[in-house]
Image 1 (spheres, rainbow, N blue to C red):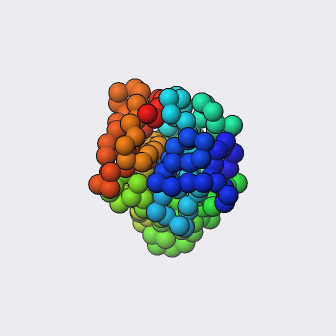
Image 2: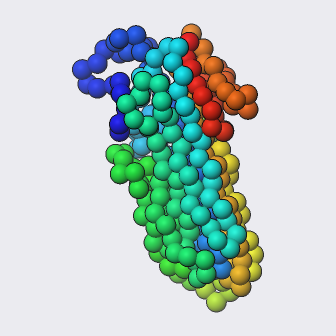
Image 3: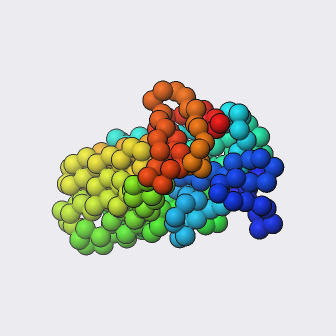
Length: 287
């Protein structure tokens, strides 16, 4: 995890403040989800999901940033669906005094009988895509399932494998309370339906889109959660688009966030922490 000033075992810390005057920040970084496959398609993989708050299954270390310094926040877009699906794009935090960008990887597109094979990503696209493309520990996501109507991988589980019946379920996401409200993120897309093999499969909890039925279009993954798009059904069903990602930053009570552009927002959690939520790319500064 290439971040300047990340907390180590010997660093002084307390109440969100680090030695040297930096401010310890907790985060949720979710990349864009992959698009679902076309024509008996598999679900798109969820955007890579990296969290440093209240989730020991996927708990990265906090980062430390400097007051009065502007940081660039990138929010990844979801991949295209339709007949030529694409993978999602990365989200991350960079600039300022960070030695390197802190990133989550876009979800892989779902494979299909038409329109190309599965791709690797933060979570892999269904039909064989591999997750955790960034090579992070803990993993940012899991593999897609195998077979032509498989589920895309999710933040905490592999996608379901194709077999007769609605078994190509999208991999499950992960729930975070960083904003003050428990919310699931990073669900994989479900596989599309085919009358000879079974109905469409549901997307994973955390914004994964449901697969489309015979001839039907897969559901789009949820924006702001990085959900994978649902696979299109047989008979030329189009894949659903992947959901856009999100970046959420949490600072100690008494801090003040300045964010741009204005479509991004700030708030106060019930415990007094100061929250900055980015649904589009922009900048963040702490005071």
